[in-house]
Length: 264
Picture 1 (cartoon, helix red, strand yellow):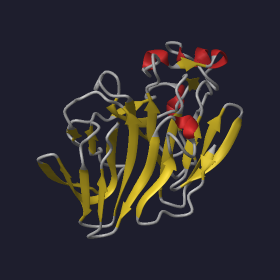
Picture 2: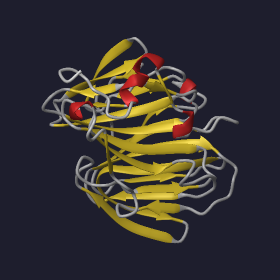
Picture 3: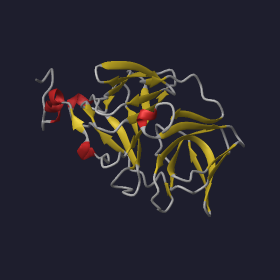
């Protein structure tokens, strides 16, 4: 299902709620939009949270820490992402118009808060050298079970190179997943598949992808497509790349030195 974007208001824009709308995503998710000088504060007694800067210039305050962070482009720059346990208050003040993602999962574990910096997050190109470069994309994994085994959430970013595919070959996993999209230029578009159904997505749209359904993505030629991807670790079913399964009919695309038309 696609949540179409009709514009975000300043403040918090809720898109998924554990006990409310889109509850089958099993996590809270939304967009924090702030104008210059505006503030947002968050406290949760039972939920860990992540705050990812999509674009802008903000000051983060948590516990005894304070950090000014900037990001000019989610396409060209690695992310900043603050991850805190339940009980920690986070204050965000904008020095310019800014947007961040908010993700929250129930987690009573105690762990140290961490700000993932642009230098720490690895940016990798997937799809190079195969399938005539038609699935080239930039992938940035920020938090997963290997990086933060104490966490119940997963968050990362993908940039589809124009006219290319991602989440490819088609794959699925038992956990649901959220994709939140941005385009460069902003009038761009792409397509999000969910099983046999495909949906056009535009700037600011959000896909709510249920578990056990394959979900390949593609961007239109001429338009880069960025999306934040978010997955909840489910009880006794944590997400990992090892628990991600490719559709049987498309597994041949993973073969070493696979040949496709016109070489095939």
